[in-house]
Length: 503
Image (cartoon, rainbow, N blue to C red; front, side, top):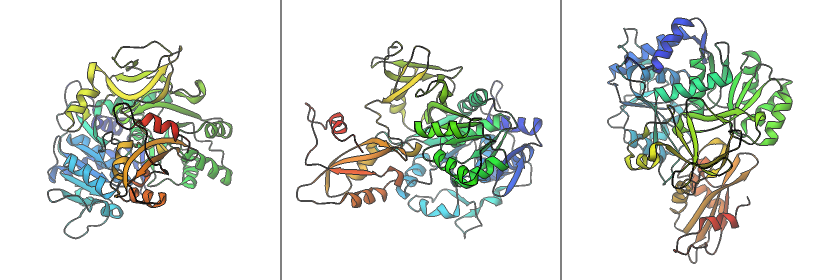
């Protein structure tokens, strides 16, 4: 460790020293204290070092929430390695791209997810499974937990990368955001401060750990020396049980999870009395129901993105309904015009950020980094405005970053359009988001067929779902004779969206 740095490994060791007997994780049918977790991390670090993993090397994981996941993050932090969490909802082709992009030295895959790596070149990768050993190709991850002394902590600064999380694809391919120890721990500390987290708090860990929200909340509980109960998949009945039986106090949610939990609680006669913090996004009517049925809990809204390691603004929803909260401490959030000049309150512009939570940059994307970090700011590509009291209001996406968020996932039109245009019957396609009662936002495609071609909307939707993650496929497809054009001859996306905005 370096003189003025504090890494995730330091946090794990601190918890073991000061809160060693307190629960850190409940997962896979076992309960681990902070001291036991630190010991597992050290044991796995020894095995990974023996497998050749060292400072700066990547280790990828494709698995559902479980103890192995958080063990790996802790072990990588000790070794100075970088974890690449892979979204298990991606297609075979998308998984292959992430692996080719990051060239991990070690790959860890759950048995049920091994078909997803079938398209990747793994000739030079050491492969481990979270299940039993599978022939000569897949060794058991359990074999890497060694009893011998762990290697000493790596001599890294807290600005070193800890995670590479691939974001939605602006230009048709995802980009790996490199998140540092410093940024992730700053985001965690922000949550601890805002929510008054303590060692007595318990997170109901339903958000997937490949998602920044999932790993970010888990790190927040670690910084607070609290506990996280990890669920491999979202199950509303199980969530209600954990809140009632294990006094689950903190949970993250994306549509339609909160509504499902409220339904399950009503069916079980539960008042969810252990819950005090719920955070995420949801529809106003669901939030009103939550406030009525869980009066002792608060729903927190926020604005952030993977590139900011977490939320750069936050507050209780009830404090200023419709806003994204107040900027967090030790960070500067500003609104600028097209010339990067600050605009006054009430005026919309691009949201830009400075501070320790800002990511290190996109992996192997120097040209994109130069644009993103111009003028000494991280340019989010999102539009917003401040009101007179300093609350941030999200306005929409910039034309260069027309992001769609079905169920909290990030989808860019370019990657869906690229998949659509692989169909031999299509000549043009424009994709955008439309409101959706269940998922918050849904994907709509307006398409032009080649002369003489016919195609059913359902068939096209399934075609796309076979090429990219199924959550990225359109929910609505409209066929038109032609798309409107701009004066320069390009497709007028604004006009398309205006004409077909209704779901």
